[in-house]
Image (cartoon, helix red, strand yellow):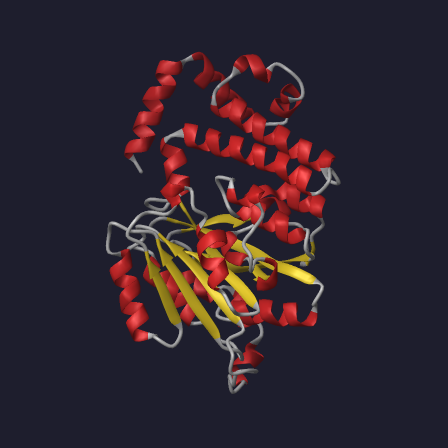
Length: 347
């Protein structure tokens, strides 16, 4: 386990150590859904961090391996054999993601029978052994809340910690409830492996605006926010791995067009969400869509569009170094391609 385990957050709630850890009920209360694909280097750490959770309730782990071509499935089977009472795994022979099938919404969610669902991806891990208990206690005490989440620390593919916290744009916030405008503004920055929600809102899957989007975390939190409260713990209870082998982040670092297409998919999703909510949050949605379009203009090095409002104003708010990089990349394509080629060799 990473040295993040010694985070100051883990020293809180020491009273839980003195409990007898007797389940409040014989029936499991939480299912932890884990999605995995070609993550042989990371899946063990992910599962160990879940199994290390200290709770006074029972929980299950439901793992979906999406036809991995490395040793990921073999490692999962070893954990399943060692913990048959806690782990259930699904092993695909055909990659479902490539078939446009939503893993969480269409495969895993209908199989969950517990009151609550927690999420983790195969290359991420939890850093506080009290994470599940903290979130469970809050949800039990606040039945009006549909989902709670928390901050996460970023680690690199080799496990090295960084100074980056997700979501960095809500770092000043104290632990608090989030309204829809805030959730829309944050975008997909709330860590997926922090989500802990009431399963009844997802028992029949998620709306189509979720299923058709290229990402799952952003439309999921938006949908859950329409069902009840959203509570955010400004505590680092998990780690998000950036640039892991085979991850979406590494793919768009290699090919910015993937990032552009993903942003376009999110823009379309927000149009559908706008319709789903009867235009109640249209102003916040339009503002967020402008930000995504601005990102695409920057990525595509479109100097013509950057001169038009509202993008011109957004461009002027950028740090000088980023504006300089944009100008160099957009004016000297050959030099930019050479630099990218050198950067990619370091991955």
